[in-house]
Image 1: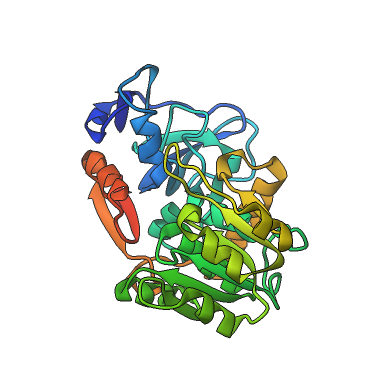
Image 2: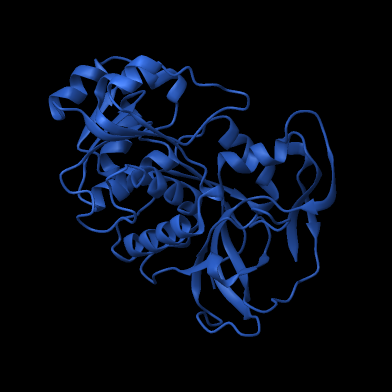
Amino acid sequence: MKAIVYEQTGPSSVLKLRNKPLSEPGPGEVRVRVVVSGVNPTDWKSRAGGGGSTTLETPKVPNQDGAGVVDAIGPGETALSVGDRVWLWDVAWGSNEGTAQEYVVVPAAKAVPLPDAESFDTGASIGIPALTAHRALTANEDGPAVLSPGALAGRTVLVTGGAGAVGHAAIQLATWAGATVITTVSGDRKAGLARLAGAGTVINYRTGDVVRAVRDVAPDGVDTIVDVNAPANIGTDLRVLKPGGTLAIYAANPGESLNVPIRESMSRNVRYQFVLTYTVTDKQKRHAVAAVAEALRARALRVGEDHGLPVTRFALEETAAAHDAVEQGAVGKVLIDVASVS
């Protein structure tokens, strides 16, 4: 089978198209024929490494997210069947096998049924972004542990960077759960995308007064902030966050630090929640996967231009270019077509 592999960390040029033998699923595992692979910032950052070039002990296949069709079932697995459509999450975490290949063997729990009405594009777009968004939205001390319709009723959520993949998922999940959703963006096109995603109030932070606009909607402040750039936003965040509110931080550049205004944070009893979906507790991950699966069934998580998350496509052999596109800040979701739908 065809696979993209890298044998050392470094720039995208380390990614090579290779032929690999087909692996058989073991107990509790399934093999999935990957139709679409999704690219996230952590994918290119893992491939790049910490700087310089490090030779790996074992070649790695990149990419955490994907969607496809169950092709083979390992011994003892009964929840899935050959031919089931599934979406995949955290595939490359703790493994050398990612989704940038024609077939991948995964623990059955990492292959979640994809509704027939939903596309493989959606399935390949939701793993890391939606699971991250779920943890951020459930980080509030007195909030729900798992999202469902009405779970965030009466609450106000601010999503910074609402046109990004995590921001898009946060808007859709928060709206589905009944929250009032405010988001900030950097331009008119992104504002349009955030509205299509379902945000009730969209603020261009480059031209508008974010604090005033947020306070117009939420005079007492917002309950939760899902923040893509806390170092730049911390001052504004503390001015719009409700006392006892939560600032959920899910993104950072390598080596980046956050200068926390201690007195201002103390006076508002702010809760800081740093989020890395790979290392949340097993219970938190189960809650997130279950909620995202329910939202998918409800058609509350959608992708594509009409839903506020435009898709940029690459072929499998163009995976290096796909990684570059994400690293360079492509708007929307970057997907890799691995196999044809049949």
